[in-house]
Length: 274
Image (cartoon, rainbow, N blue to C red; front, side, top):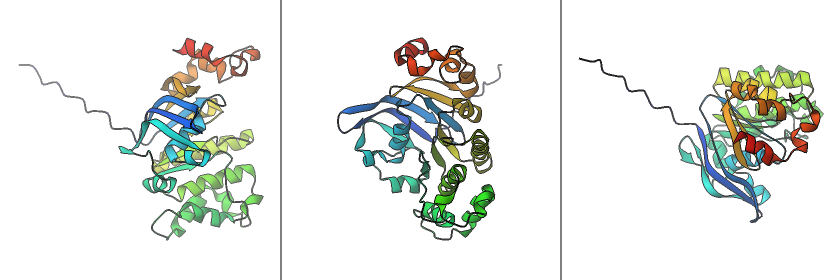
């Protein structure tokens, strides 16, 4: 008699999945060309690529913001918690638990810190946000000291406010677009430490678009690399950080700086990766 072999449990469905998504702007400009990726619940996933690869467009396709730039998903589907997001308005997507922290922060400069935070909760049906504000200020104690208009905050403080505003919506998934942009190295470290805390302590899933590939891969458990609207390489973040091509083109380990991605045609990298 042989012992019965235990059947392995199926892997849980991802919180977010993009399946063969194509995005077109102004009915003629094809930006995403059959892009697919998954983001497991409770994880940080990095999306890397050169300028113009389609990273921000990917986030806007998820959050429903393509319409603001005359863009549309023309093929494929975006699934969140198993439900299709295609065609939903941004407000409806936020209500489902998805919030995008935009590139450039996009805080309201002539509103106070507290007013900006309250704005993040505007899609919630309940209006009792005092406890949420206290929680945000607990993560960002520097904001508690800033009682004036948000426009007078430093760049790092504005980024903290933008992330705090996202927390006010009580999201399950945060889409972060270039959170380190324009910040000093010290503030970059501080912002990424906050991103890790939100993931570890609150269990918030994060899809992270970031030019600082080194920091992104250090924070993430998995990563994707985009070229010209497609995923050309993906894998565990530690493996990508050790990949020779990734080190050459994104981590600055190529030796000869003339061999950066700015001076090489992307198809050369894609041929090597594919």
